Length: 294
Image 1 (cartoon, rainbow, N blue to C red):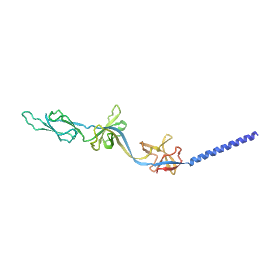
Image 2 (image 1 turned 135 degrees about the horizontal axis):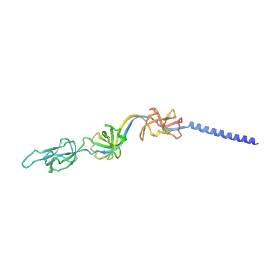
Image 3 (image 1 turned 45 degrees about the horizontal axis):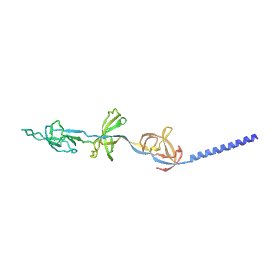
Image 4 (image 1 turned 120 degrees about the vertical axis):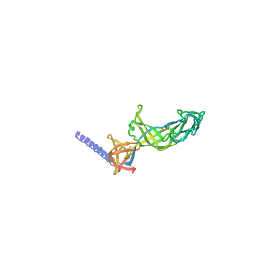
């Protein structure tokens, strides 16, 4: 009886083992035959623009004081504050008449082109060669001074194009080029300075306005993919590539990164299509069905 009982128990155990094995095999087959819906995007060839973002203020123009070459009385002022003048334009007349003497009036001319910044004297005032009559703000070039971190300063070169926005003038973008790079760093913040000259003079821009600047330091053709398709596998960067309705795992080397795009240096070709949205259960070799994308 004991032998029969043992045989019965053995049979029951074998039955359950076989059942479990069949169920596991069935689940494995279901997974291997499962088709995952995915969204894909083609690898794109684009111009990759590398830039340095910084900020600064519109530079106050250099000011030049204008003097009379002779002492006398200021009899006429021919300009007003904020008025534009050109070099050699007459701005004032000085009368140097003395008792018993008659002299020709002294003509005072602008020595630079710009805008009248300040009138120091009024008509009728006494003048001398050491007393400025007025000052002119030089405006041949409108410039912007920006601060640059030392790690970015080495990327700057003369003539690099810059895109400028001003908080005081929303919705407008201006362009300029780097015309001066100061290599000496500020000891307090380890920053250097650069000067950007606007491509054109804009009367609406005022000295001292705060500016945000993008300096283009490099342009190159690159393969680009969306950042959401990148996965970390074995501590390496990888993507799933859609090929013949199968998910293929590919390890890649990344270049520069932005919020909406990532540069790929190796691992992909321009003809590849990467999977950007898929189930977390997706594995290499999984069957896929493209529901959105090209």
